[in-house]
Image (cartoon, rainbow, N blue to C red; front, side):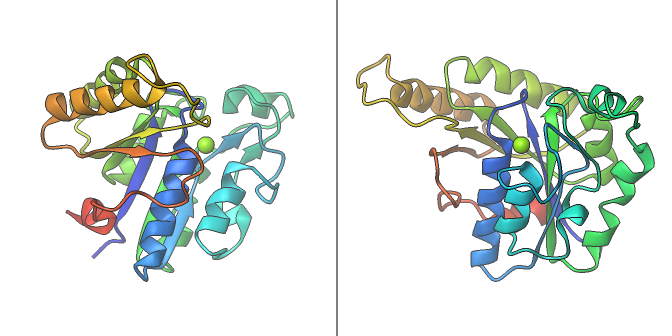
Length: 231
Ligand SMILES: [Mg+2]
């Protein structure tokens, strides 16, 4: 049986994908699984070993299997789209390597967690979008949005677009990318996000909707992520 996995994609850039991917990885490791971690390309990232970079955070969460360069074989320094970031260094994104970089993980992992770059339709190469990789890897999606106003609209656009592409959505996660303010009442972020999660649950019916708190290192209990990857 091929190695199962999940593909963590965003509704946009900077919505908390890495935190979510790392939290899923730690939850699976706590259940005794060998978890591979892969990010096809990262920009705004000098090297895969850089502290605080996406590949480094994924690698640390996974217990440092293989090498950081295996987590993300292509990193570019400028915090812009990968193709432009590569060009700024006189390089090109290797579109084959975006795909084959995953192979290294299949033999050493019980399952693999992939983090995309940007949103579902963000370009990751001259002729490759995140959605193209998602279709080829054929892992169920975990769709991440930032836990803030507008989450219902942003998330439903991405879920419906994913389904239109024939992709399966395993879960939706609203990720708190900033600490909560002490505000209370209906205009507080806590209330807005609770309301958004309830709305999404109603609209999505069969897809679990989870909230990840700021700084939480593991996913809240209640979802079997291995089952989500294989089922
Ligand atoms: Mg990230």
